[in-house]
Image: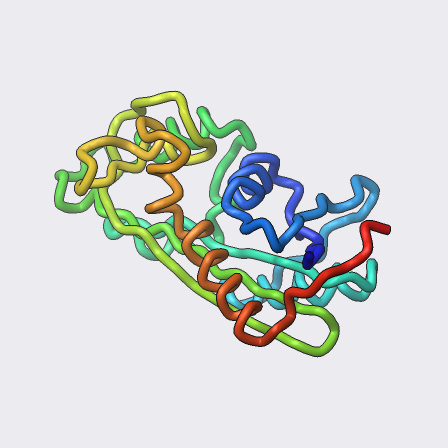
Length: 199
């Protein structure tokens, strides 16, 4: 079994990754006392690599790090890498309300979004990366499942928001889950998944 430090303090992200983890991978939460690095990268990949290396140096354990963002067709310059810095509140409901207010005057065609996720595995030597994305439309909040932006992200194929889907259905569309599954396959091909003691 491969034990990975999950380089996030976001409970929703951690839970989503844990649910998607294959039996051969065990995700370990970050120690609460660890501070986060300054995400100064100019790409999602750069930020994910920065976090992976930072936490590996602190813990000397293999790390799974991610970075991503929400990109809006109508406002291409205000979110993306700056997604979390854009919001005036850390509360997901208030963040969603802020986005809906921003898009209120936009026609439906301009409400397109792209949700991006980049994952990185780093163990001090091997560095593996994967990326996935989801496109759809921003809509009024619907549903109670998932976390973060899920209630306002409408998936045309399902004719529902991510928050209206079951966990299994959401996993089909979640860029983070899809990137994690692709990375897991890379780990298997590189034979980096092996039996380990529980200690």
